[in-house]
Length: 386
Image (cartoon, rainbow, N blue to C red; front, top):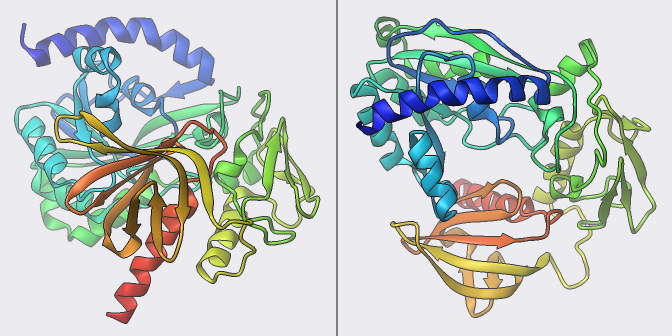
């Protein structure tokens, strides 16, 4: 039995096994897609469960998913995943050209492909815009483009959090664009259509029709997303516990409610508004850095090779110093890092000096976002100066 036939056979078995569990565990409802031809499916990305949740709408199709490269570095688990389902590796923190070519090969071989177009799950409950190259892929693929939206996932399983909250989720096809239609559209039009179709504003939806998401320790590890206190502007002073987030410096104390809003609602009612404010403060250096500078302890630095093998380079304190990331004997100027991204919450991956690297920590509340933002703002500055 060839690989594609095996995957289709196994999917029929998996569907019967996982469908009842996912529907019950996530409060999940979904539409049933009627597509038979190979499709390029593009969806928003909210939880690590999204591939399975989306697949429930495509009962008669086995889909190849574009997934982060780190899934191929999990030993026997990686081998099991590849045996069960078709996975196309995507190195976050790289240009992704090899991934695009792999998608085209799958589509032209008659296999449907799903891409979570933003490349990462949302930190703040707002859908991350799709990468422009995705629109180009849709146009040249020769396949039908199907857009899909998952709703309610952010408060069910927030990227920064731990565990699931019981509430409601829904998934369904939004738009279907045959290849003949795509040929008549400009790339900007395709990109705009995709972004419009898959966009979910968690806070607008909750304001219009609040859904309760019940769970223990609702606010725990929120400091992995929110890292500047709005009360005193200290960076790294926030600490979460149960359903509250507090500041060690000024005593700010907020409750994260079952509907996802903060109480009291000042200074910010929602995570996304707080996040936009803190990003502006970070860009302007309008914050108070922690004593000793922006740093995290117990960080592991590894090099990742093309065959997914890894080499340990250093362990210890990661420090952002003079526009460079420093750990052990390594000093990497931000301007020399070509791409950077975060996997899950605690893995910082990037391309540097022609190779691929990862910085990771086992501390669940560690905020790696500040390093990505520092890199992003440095590159923006260089572009403006250039």
